[in-house]
Image (cartoon, rainbow, N blue to C red; front, top):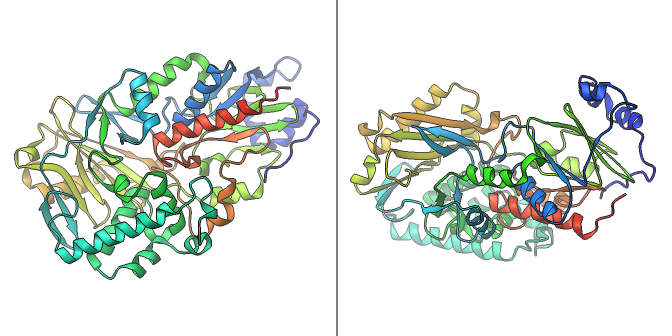
Length: 493
């Protein structure tokens, strides 16, 4: 569904004119380009990559190892994308992506390759869960429930896993009964498949925690695809040695990005937001306020909803634009609270606090450093709750979060030594987190174009991965896949 680029190379004057007022204005203020076409020329590379998150950097790494010259243009003043560094009580933390699971093999291999280390998520002791107004302190996320409720929860989980196992990962729109499943929302399916209020609220809460979106917003087919992409429901939502939350990186997840970037060297250009991409039969021209880059191909490796905010010449296919409009980013605010020590451990608690009450479904998880002090609790304000609290003063969010933790752990939690949070909906280069979700009907009408190149422009990013979509592992795979696409059909001009 991509447009066919003109066989005649666009002149620089024609390319600028085609970019429109916004593109021309961005170029006009740049001293490098203000000299005019006779005095300046685009920087020449083989492949231009937009975005220095894991997808973009791993694409660059693959291409460089195959002998190609690349440049990676990043709008932010750092690498890593949705893996963001922060500090809490003098210790490095992750303001974004943080955990890694045992089947996220590409990420684990990358961590090991760059000499970094993981530790198990702390789970020794009991957790506290609040569902439908009732709090239970027990081993396991649903332990302590009445037998009938537990059996119903297990039945619904098994049914979700059965249905997700039927999803065709590479082409979920071809899954049996795809159109029927795609018309349903997650909320509609849950309400039709369980009458137990506790179980219903549990899975509604799980949906918000996993997707940072509400169950009524999301296609059930997309939900099943996501479960299949990440193995199964418990692998995604659980907290155990087999789940996506099994391990933390001692040095921080962002340090993995830093290590990858260090090997790429000056191929990465920070604070270089791209405003336009023009292509013709001879290649692509990528425009930023800091210059132009000319290459044989481009890879766009930014969140899908943001990928259409640049000006494309020729324009993107209408279906590509429609997909971006109907696949919004989730909404989440990640927060960290620090204490002198992890006092909850002394009470036989593991720090895992969960609730089905907004605005935070995962109220806390113990992310204390490997040394054992200070004590760290980390979690998220998600979905509609994040939109409510986004943009408000951090001190207001801190008070709300600390009060909530106090309600679980008592007055000892009332005086943290530090607090930090990351308001992802307010981040101009992500506009949300963890990832983007498809609404009803989107997968079967638009999903097939998510990885389809637009002429010489290829797409990467975690949302384009069929394995561990929405996670760093998926981002790595997507970058390597986009690089492989280009290398398999490389036709320089």
